[in-house]
Length: 297
Image 1 (spheres, rainbow, N blue to C red):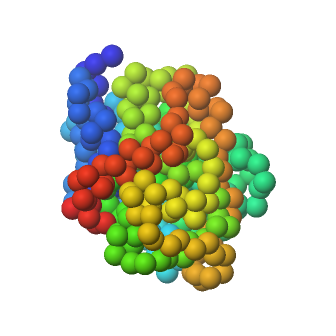
Image 2: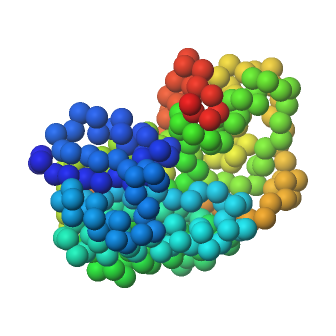
């Protein structure tokens, strides 16, 4: 179908910037808004934008993603990640629009030994996870039609992320230590944006409302991800040493196990999810060839 108007928040973030690329050839009208364009913590501003654009769907990529910072700025993290999604959801409900909201694996405590299904009990262990879970609940309780996509370990060619940090370190230093006792699923923002685009463009959300998990196929540790990144970049003279998480004390606890079960997503939407190594190779090849800075500018 064509002729829809879709608002995408978080236009300047990793996912938002990839979503711009994914929908470049769309017959629909995609409107991308960043922090300077829309304050998602202001329900009146949201209402004005939706009324002006007559949007039929909203994709909320906006979030406060500083996990460490959320420990010191809990009120702000809750405002952006917990309360604002509810404002977006209420505006969608009042206008009959659909909402796609992005959440996180950090709603879980990391104590499982099996991949997390969508209905597994949530129990976040840090302020970021608490706020994101509040956002999920605000969306679900609003009465709007929605799809919540939980994802994990997001990286891309844009902005600051773990993969770009590894590339910088391996190009400039002799060695680095990376934790091996945190396991999860790296997710390339380009893959997630393509999935979101297909869901919205083809209205695959119709009849499929609810919470879903999307992350790269396969499982690895941060140490594995760092090693693979350096190898793909050709930085083989660099030493990456494995260490325990307590080697780097942080304000925010991180789940030790963040593997997401994607069965429901694949069954309902029929969208193939690439293996994490394959997607990493695509991203690293671009970053090495284009020599994009860690900041992504």
